[in-house]
Amino acid sequence: MSIVLGYDESPGARRALGLAIDLAGRLDEPLVLVFGAAPPGVVGEEAGSHTQALVELGQTVLAHAVADAEAAGVRTVLELVDEKPVTALLQAAEKHDARVIVVGTYGETPLRGAILGSVPHKLLHLSDRPVLCVPADRG
Image 1: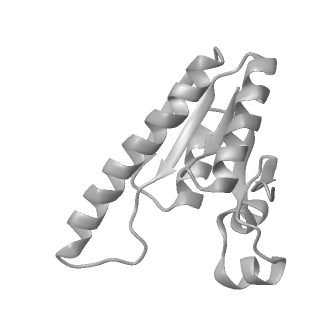
Image 2: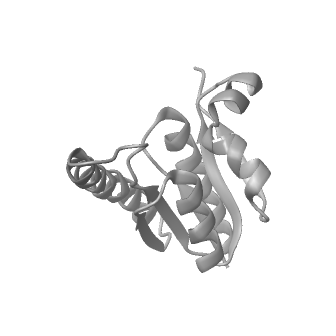
């Protein structure tokens, strides 16, 4: 089993990282760090450059998360997936037999999340595994 974390360095994701590291350490399970690198709705010539930019961003973002996890003595697995975040997280959860999927939230209202299709909102409806939504620190 594992703990799967969607990570993008947003305030909610940074708080979720701390919680996921703690949970993985307590359960002695690997922390699977996931970054979905598919550009949203881009087609044509610019799709390649958008994808490459997202891959480079994902590599940097995941490297920061790995450093934090390793400092806490938690094993990590990286998943830089060429899919949108929800699909990337669901695939990683299945592949790594996730005990839970952890994601940060941005403080959206439930209605806004439902209308815009936030990652936490979609995961809550599509995942067959528990989803832990961690709000950004409001302090």
